Image (cartoon, rainbow, N blue to C red; front, side, top):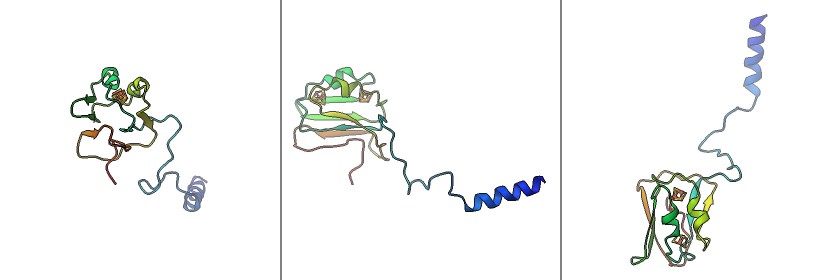
Length: 123
Ligand code: SF4
Ligand code: SF4
């Protein structure tokens, strides 16, 4: 009887949809409030450095003279403290996870009038 049950399972599995996704071709939608990566909108930034002060891991460096905002993505623990600290709404948390990247630190110029997702490789 046990072998009949086994064959039933085998035949059943043959015609069922797979339990897993064909990643990376099929990606799951991110859940609400997923902390995937930080998005920086350089046109909104006024170089106040509040995000740098509040970052517990020292992942952000704001250079007022050079007008740059830099994120060391390997130091970032995605706590969201910088997003809460920014009163210019220049930072937000994106649900999508960061892709593979060679450079650990990403530097973005401030006030160039664009939007950047520093953790995401350029398309
Ligand atoms: S999410 Fe947290 S660790 Fe990452 S840059 Fe912002 S404050 Fe720093
Ligand atoms: S991102 Fe926000 S908190 Fe950070 S320097 Fe720019 S304006 Fe200030």
